[in-house]
Image 1 (cartoon, helix red, strand yellow):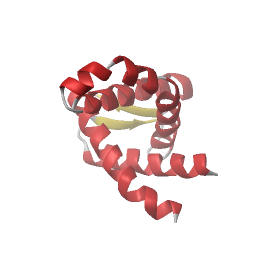
Image 2 (cartoon, one colour; image 1 turned 90 degrees about the vertical axis):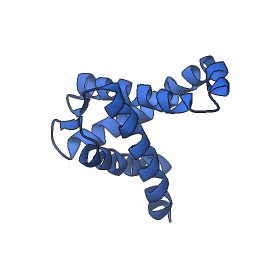
Image 3 (cartoon, one colour; image 1 turned 45 degrees about the vertical axis):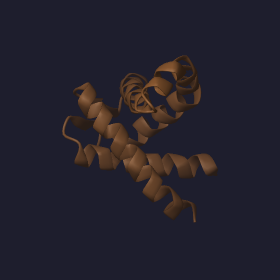
Image 4 (cartoon, one colour; image 1 turned 120 degrees about the vertical axis):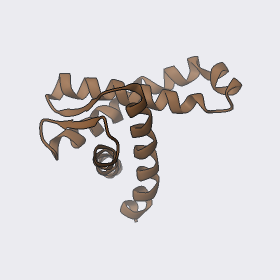
Amino acid sequence: MEFLGTWLVTSIATAAAIALVPGIRAVGGSYLGPIMCALALALVNAIVKPVVEVLSLPLTIVTLGIFYLVINAMMLNLASGLSVSLFGSGIEIDSFGAAMMGAIVISLASMIIGPIISG
């Protein structure tokens, strides 16, 4: 049940990023796009992100954690491509700047919505 709650929160946060960030669009439907991208983002965050975080730890320490934003943007960009290629729907990101802003919006929205949905 926890996975479904997290998936719902991430879907809502992704929809917020689509609405707020120019350069991010839903592909395959305004509802299905964020839902499938959230699923791909969950897979990427579970499998790829820990490896990337460990490999980039020295750079993250040198930049006092700011590089973590770049990692989040890369994971969102990867999830975007995976969702469209695997599921046929997701989000399309125009530039790395849009991915960076989208990652920030998704993080903030998840932080706000998460406690509300979980109770």
